[in-house]
Image (tube, rainbow, N blue to C red; front, side, top):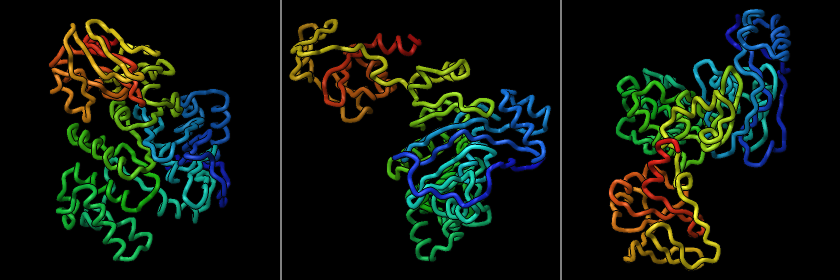
Length: 408
C-alpha cells in the first residue's frame, strides 16, 4: 500500500480568475480521498459509488477510504472546525487543502488575493506558491526545529521563501510580542514547555502572514489547563488578526468554544455542518445527537436560549411576576419589584454581573448563561434581555437557569 492517496485528477495548472463565491476562502466540493495501489483504485471507486462502506472496500480492494463525498465552504475570517473521532477523516481532509494529501476526485478551491486555485488539480509551481504565501499549518506535535532558537523557528517560513534578513527580524519580533515570548527569543526549543512550544508554532504560522491557517489538533497533546489557556489565546489573536482558520479537533467542547462553524465527520463523511446552535439544538442524526448529549450546557447556552420571551408591541408597561417595567419606545427605563423602585443597570462587562445583586441588570441576547449563573447565586432579581436595538425581548429568572441546566 502506498503512503499517499491515489489521484485521478490530471496534474495541470489550474487557476481561475473569478471567485468561487464572495467571502468564501475555501470551497471543498465532492472530495474523495483514497489511499492505496493505483491498479486497485477503479474497483474501490466503483464500490464507493455503489454505497459499499469503507471496511468492505478495504477488505475487497486493499484501498483505504479516508474521505468520501466531502463538501464544505469555509467563510473568510472564520474559524471552521472539522470534528470527529479518530479515523473519521478530519485530518485527511485538512491535509488536502495544502496538498499534503492528494484528492482522488472532486475539487478544492482556495481563494487568494490574486486568484482562485484548485488545489486538487494545480501544478507544482502554484502549489509551492500557495504553501509559501497563502497557507500555514500548525501541527499537533508542534513540528518545530528542536536545535534552533525560538526566533529561528518563528522566522523559518520566511527564510524558506527568501525574505530579507531585516524583514524576517522585524516580523519575528512582532510575533514574539504577539504571543508573549519576547524573553525567550534566544532560547532553544527544547528548553521550552509544551505550551510555549505550541505558541511558537502559532507565531511561526502567523509570521508568514498567510490568509489561511490549517490547524491539526494543535492543543490535544497538552494538559487541560494549558489547552484551555491556548484556546483563549487563539481567540484573542483571531479577534485581532481575522484569519481564516480550518481547525481539526476530536473534542466537541473545544469545537464549540472555538468554531464559528462546525463540521462533524464520521467514516470519512461530513454528516452535518452548522453553527454551534445547529449542532447542539438541531443535530442532524443520531451520531451527532450522541456527541451533543455529552456537552457542558454552560459552554453553549446564551441568554436568548433560556429567557421567557416578552411581546411588547406598543406597550408602555410590562409585568412579569412581581416585576413591573416601564418602557419608552420598547426600551426599559424604570423598574419596580413588589412595588419598590429598583435600579436598572446595562452591564458593560459580564464579569460584573455577580456584584450587581441589588439592581435589575440588562444584558444582550448573546450573553453567556455561565455569566448569569454568578448573578443567580447572589440575587432573586430577574435579568432583562434586550435585542440589538435595545428593545426588551425577554426576562430571565433563576428557575429559567435551573431548567436550562437540567435539560429542560
